[in-house]
Length: 131
Image (cartoon, rainbow, N blue to C red; front, side):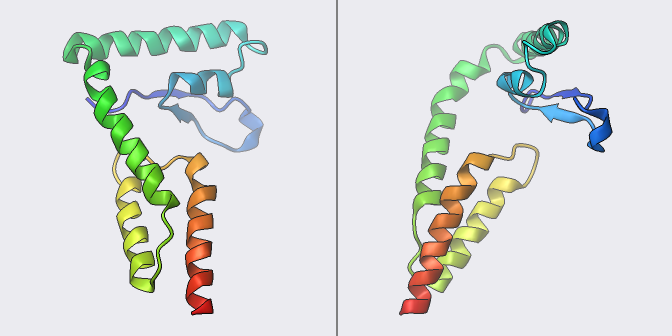
């Protein structure tokens, strides 16, 4: 079983956005704030908890088993994103490697990573033009 997913309708039906798929329980509070929609927020939290219980009934408590390796992967990804390549082949290799993190069901590059990634690539490209 992969990542738990909970699909909810767009919080703003007039926005033109379709349903939103949540992959983190904290996202519920972001898209459906507790103070603005307490009943709906509580319902989505209950749905999330049911999905977690169903998964644990099938796989056991795999979250505890995966926590260490996932944290190591996350820290390695952050270190890689902050690394500044020193050559054009290094830039191409970094982009090619990171492409693998955006494919498949479990996208592991989060929005918070992009400023650091863009700063690293910008510094690398500026370094190439100065050389």
